[in-house]
Amino acid sequence: MILVTGATGNIGSALLRELHAHGVGPLRGFTRDAARAVFPHGVEAVEGDFAEPTSLKPALEGVRSLFLVSGLGSDADVLEAARQAGVEHVVLVSSITVQTHPHLGPADENLAVEQLLKETGMAWTILRPTQFASNALMWAASIRGRETVHAPYAETALPTIHPADIASVARVALTEPGHHGRTYALTGPEPITARQQVEAIAAVLGREVPFAEINRRQARAQMVAVFGAEAADAVLDVTGGDVNPELLMVRDTVSQVTGTSARPFRQWASENADAFRRIARA
Image (cartoon, rainbow, N blue to C red; front, top):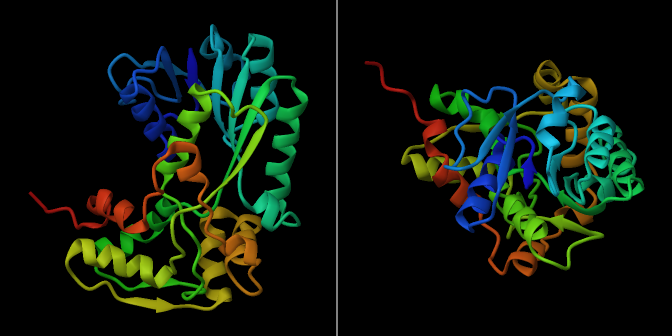
């Protein structure tokens, strides 16, 4: 049994689909609302909440391998519950900032979870992805409303990764030998700026999408309301100012592990175009 947490999220949902497509099973998806979860046929939906550690026990029953996205709840409680349940292998999604920006609070938190996992005695594989392509969904409301997209550091080009590529690496790590005790830094196939991301979305929609660069102060004011001060400062520190060159590096880890090239941002934009289209009124 493989248990996928964050099963309705960008990575977890893609992972369940890919595991199912490869004939892997049995599979179980952990979700807050099992009645509303849409999983591939045969995937067991188990309802629970990371805020309620007792709900993890039935979800972990009979589980051999666990896919865990850090930060969804008390990672220490989840890992201890997994250890007690006899889980043998954990694939953990951390962040590339652990190695590029270790001085930042969120990076330090991710590193602490990595260390907790290593101390459990369970086999482990750690994934450290860079910026997600799906972060562009923060612009969806503006684009649907035909408003101007505002973003800071418009010319900083990061090798943004498609969440499905993270899922593909996780699938291989969960099902094939040779990945225990490995840490993988994951990126997309090419650097892309915020401006270029908006241009890619515009091309998919077949219309212009206005874009304007804003300064750090303006961006922080918007982001604090959504993410909180610490997270907002961390994101701006990572993407702006004196960017660590290691963060800008394109890595071929996805193709090395999966045998398939990483997906470009334009593919993610095409697959998610409906999120940026205005909903027609009945």
